Length: 465
Ligand code: GLU
Ligand code: MG
Image (cartoon, rainbow, N blue to C red; front, top):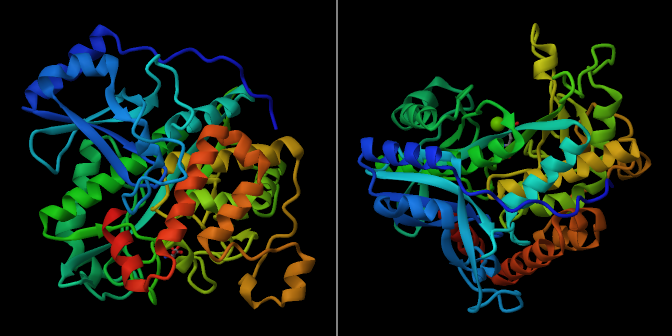
């Protein structure tokens, strides 16, 4: 893998002009509280807010946060074997470019944050800084990664001890479009008001399931957008007395919620798509195949980042179009990496790869950072992804899959974490502090659900993601 860059400059505080601009926007929208948000190792979005009166100073210094939060799991427990406890502090330092007034809740705005040390350096356990390191790694090779998380989510209401889906409309039906319209239209508008551009919409197969793909963007912006999307869907649904759940498998026997990770790699030199080659039968360049080679090589470990909750492994089963094997194929919706067919007239722009075993319980900075590390490894080593698979890989015999080097994806979070622990390249990319803490947090989640029933699992995943 490419050598790590040594020292990086500390993050610069926003300049006066930026501060004045945010203060002006707060004033004109009568904002009282500004949320400083981050996504933890557990994939839960958390934060603290400051009053508008103190925004200028907190923009510069960040808001203090106990280091313990990166040893917290999704059951809201401080992990006993975690490295971080009651002593020690970091700063949630916002990226001023992520400011937006919240359209779904009164008098509030938000900013997305890095976790910095008291000295203003990226903290070793900061997920957003990890993604920045990976985009810098790409940039050193004069490449830019573009991506979009393609979310599926479930609209439901709480009834007694359970959750009841909004409807049971048929897949892609206009019946479903009608029943979800009040929520979806408000969501579409709220996303746009925050600079996120919806591109398509449909009522998906699962009960109450929606899919609202948004426009791709440069990697870090795409990960920020994923936080904004989850926040906004939940906030808008709440106004309708509903829950927007991003749990990977909200109803155990029904379609899961994926967050397929579409991505492409662009040359900074001339702004062309590195993956595009019209001469290839699937329109993919040699580099594109090497990239897939890297992703498939690391996939059993990578899913610990892209499908990172206990509930994720209920989703990754054959015949649910979520993928269950390490293989790739053109428009193959059971393959872990799909090469989507190009759009006529937009051949270069639309060339991308779709990682299917990714779901919205993931911390998007970790998921995308891990994907970039794996893909760049494939490029650097010119890894061979093997033959494209043109059928559902589950229909191949065990022997045939072995011959083609196709492996079953981990069937539990514990297995995925074992694979991540063994994957030196991914651990090295994350850095020791982040990798260690992530594994500790996620292992504690595995234990937290051991011996508990499905209802307990669903209950905890349904409303936290
Ligand atoms: N719901 C499926 C999943 O869990 C994806 C269906 C599709 O959009 O192909 O990933
Ligand atoms: Mg879908």
